[in-house]
Image 1 (cartoon, rainbow, N blue to C red):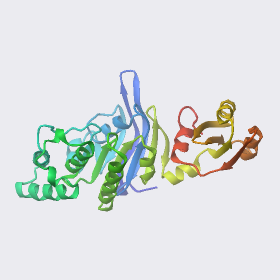
Image 2 (cartoon, rainbow, N blue to C red):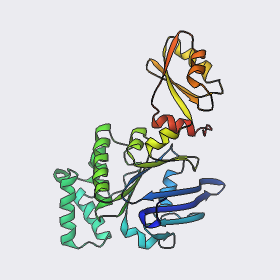
Image 3 (cartoon, rainbow, N blue to C red):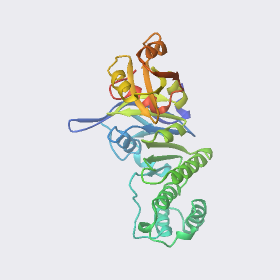
Image 4 (cartoon, rainbow, N blue to C red):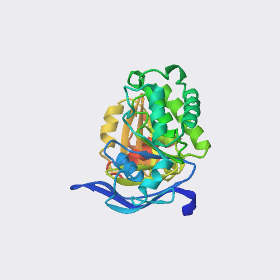
Amino acid sequence: MKQDSELAIRVRNMSRTFGDKLAVDQLDLDIPKGTIYGFLGPNGCGKSTSIRMLTGLLTPTSGDIRVLGYELPRQAELLRTRIGYMTQKFSLYETLSVRENLDFVGQIYSLGRQQRRQRIDELLRLYSLGDHQKQMAGSLSGGQKQRLALAAATLHHPDLLFLDEPTSAVDPENRREFWERLFDLCHQGTTILVSTHYMDEAERCHALAILEDGVKRADGSPDQLMQDMGARVFEVSGDDLRALKTRLINQPQVISAAQLGTRLRVLVRKSEPQPQQWLQQQLLNQTSEEVRPSLEDVFVSCTGGHHV
């Protein structure tokens, strides 16, 4: 158990309702300083609502929230100079140039003119935006907008960075480069909380929470979550995989069966005493082998009513 002084975020029973809808339901979090922590889940699961409460932008219905030692929402104003926030939708001024946007953000954080100029020059080099500094932000490509948004969010050297689905509109190459920048920031001591619905991104996090309908279904490092998963994973090869899938998904021992190319990936509950032998008995002209779980398997096993 981490001491409070080692935690960037400590949350107990955080909840938020909108009318009759419970958007976040008694969420607990312990996020150590200097780590990348992920929120994984589909749209509408409570990721953005949770981030907005943790940044002080939204008042929780109930719960005890401490971020960088500040009690929220009471001390939200004191927190704001120490955090950066990159929203899912590009939120900078599209009719200002790249440099003008960064200069404006620097003024918001009360950086002096010389300090702003030095920091902006540094960020333009770091994020390969020097050749675009006079270009209107609205005319940038998706990857360039993403880099500009990250530069703006980190201009004031925040201790804690919130990223709400930051790579949803960029290609795989830009996503990979973006994550390298995040690890650079983390190495320099910045704590990062990032929401995503990409499994490969979630696997890059030091730890993550899987959210569904405002409820935390699982929490831990990717390796630990895969190790503790309540299912064994098998891949089946052979003929008539579609017919086999139809038969298997009606069996109470099977959590999920999904085709991947020429193989059928099957999750069998650990409560089945001999899962591989049981599965083999269901096969006709197919063969099976046990394989390493993936984070997607973990997600399937603890959402959609499975909760194993």
